[in-house]
Image (cartoon, rainbow, N blue to C red; front, side, top):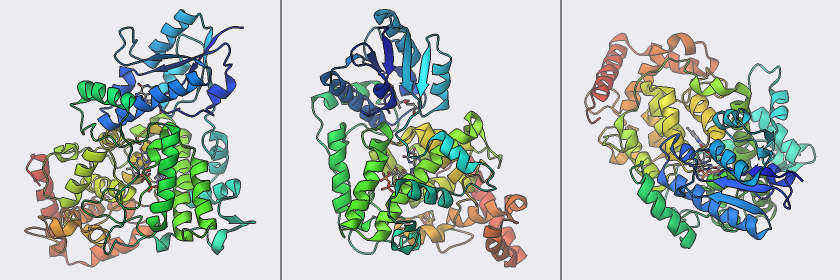
Length: 509
Ligand code: FAD
Ligand code: DLZ
Ligand code: SF4
């Protein structure tokens, strides 16, 4: 039998991976490698690098115990070739393997490298998702607008999750209007389940600290699950303790409460330790058992079989140039406070501090604080994308790109979002307690102490009038703007410009 190499990437740590299913345990050789090219293509948060390397090492051990011949390269190994393709070539020479099989990577960059590698590589579908590329393409074919909600209904029918025959459980597809409550009173949970570092994790933490210690964020404390067994415990903990409140407070933000009732399961699903469908089935079961309300179960399942699948579908449908789009022609540089420099805006500094500390921010912080600000201020979408790719543990191109380029920055011209996700300070004040501790005043619209979100909101609408004033969902905003008297509009725009000048000059704003 001719030996083949079976490549398993750092975000493919699933025992049911298509490449492993297709391979032969008796003759084929599994290749796993910690390489600088992957660790440096963006300056990843040290916690992300540590999670991937620790989980890779443990997964390799599980495969060996299962009878596979695994050739594992550590980052510090002298013979390390430095890239995935380099490692494949080295292992091919070592084993005499004739070719490589692998599951499709979640990034055009790596797909291309493998396609054109000087060793014959057979790329298999990644069937750890609910919709295949073909299913998404068929759904998208001929539609004027690719709205997530309709795709989601297809996925409900396909998976039979929360269905009663052909109808949605409880009579409605979507319970979102019940899911927008600010948190009043005590938060009853102290975040997700944490795990102690064992010897393998500790060795990785020391190495990452030494090699990537200058990247944004600190590797310690390191609370993550690094095996499937632990990730399943984290899932069970979430379903029992946080899910009942997940729906109600999904959009809320509170100082000092990074996690609220969120799952923090995206890193485990994205590197393959948990299967998205098994996560949804556990959530559905909790609803069937009467332990969680329908708005929580439906809201959570929609995020996974709806948003997560849809966002991936768009990335692969739109092709490699999607991440380069910039229809609004925004070109401002990302300011230093995204990397921890001082800012007077409390909502921004809370979100960035927490990102630095935990490599985590929940969806509304990503969308309506850092994303909203970048869009209002006209930041370059590619810089914004690279920032998000760098700072979150769950960041991979297939899931990040349509969220940044599409959802938050409208740089794709409205494929993902039917209107730009922009808001003034009023929304942030309603959904959080950030404004209370801010040096700006959310109630002040112009002049001394005016909240920058208030100024920039109108500045954004005014400078993109041509594109958005005919958008049916934005008519109200333009009517409000047009009803203001002219002097007031001039003052708003002048104050916004003056604020942006200070930002560009590097002043603490
Ligand atoms: P919860 O809110 O508790 O759970 C919801 C689950 O649904 C998540 O675990 C995730 O798997 C899924 N989900 C929800 N919304 C989305 C979405 N828009 N896209 C994809 N999956 C979704 N998620 C990532 O997994 N990786 C990313 O790189 C990523 N980048 C993002 C960038 C921006 C600008 C925005 C606005 C969102 C991004 N998201 C990303 C989506 C979302 O913010 C995270 O999935 C979520 O914060 C993860 O935390 P959680 O598990 O506690 O989420
Ligand atoms: C993100 C990442 C990092 C930091 N390091 C590695 C690595 O050393 N080896 C590896 O196989 N994978 C790594 N990954 C994950 C890959 O970058 C990921 O597979 C691609 O981005 C495609 O999603
Ligand atoms: Fe953010 Fe404005 Fe509120 Fe300050 S006042 S926290 S800048 S929304």
